[in-house]
Image (cartoon, rainbow, N blue to C red; front, side):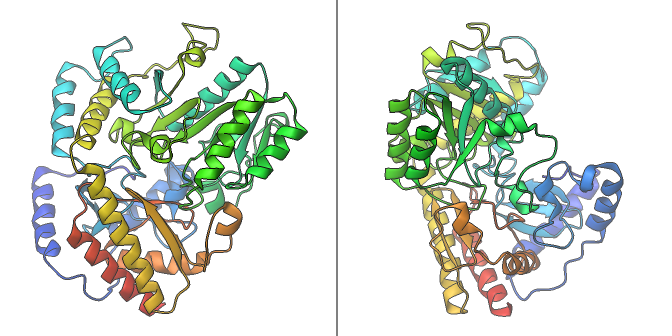
Length: 459
């Protein structure tokens, strides 16, 4: 999310008053957005930040046009620097599962700020959140908190290698596990969006130790193990792909991975940075009933603050310093603000009906969009699991990155812009999943479907 533009209390009040008027209006016909202030801010940013952003997909390169510069968020909505209001289906790329700026989370954060924002020392909050994670996630017996999903994933690869004494790892084409060197080989997300297959600056020796297989194709995995006997430390995957667009696995595929890793003595890691606590209380591994050896987490686990974690069986986790010889550290790891936000977010998600709500609104959303596409004569496929969804402009089905590449990205770019005009904020890339939250209402879904129908008619 873009950094918010400071505003006075009076300006904030005027902004919110304007919002009340707009929120009662019908979605109506598309009008040219006034993005003057966003354009000014982004123009300045391009002189200050590489590409004008601090994370590549935000630059709108794959959808064209001017990025929207955010000013503030609340619930299921975001407002830009020009006070345009949108129904938000990005949710800070997943963490805002209980809604943006949730009152309960905010109150917990305010109370913690009075006690301190960073300790660099143990605090009881780490124990509280660790217990919640261990209780919910089947594979986790011990956990280490870090500061991002990238940090969690690169730490897990080091753990795989330390535990097995092997060097090679397997990942899947189109899956993204952060920007560590070993993952920028056939990566998804922003790498796909920008048309980069790999990244300059990654040593050839590092890339050579990363083997790639095809998602939902167990035979491609078995072939790699056969060709690299006794050399593969582990395998990492998104149990539901969100960085090539939304691509669910077959349960047979996940079970096949579990079986082959067990047989070959390799470590199986589910990268649940995106799916963790979003598609089920116990993450994707609970949803599918397949337990990996280690799990990486992020986004939801920090309630919107920068955080990540990795955890697994004790015999693996006790390899990590200071319990064992594998070194990994972080000055802000276990940050008290991140712990508090994560604790409160997981508390809210544990309440009756939370995941039922996510499942209900998300199914209605994707079904409505697909129906609108069919009515207006556009090839589109897609699906959802709980609060995670996605769609492609192609006939489908899409079961791998290779299938996703067949989608009409130019049409998606036009659709994305049209939805902005209609007051709906979608991820600015065909190769990103979308997210709902507990704050999304039936009315929000209805307005979004009508907006999609209007835009699709115009394409």
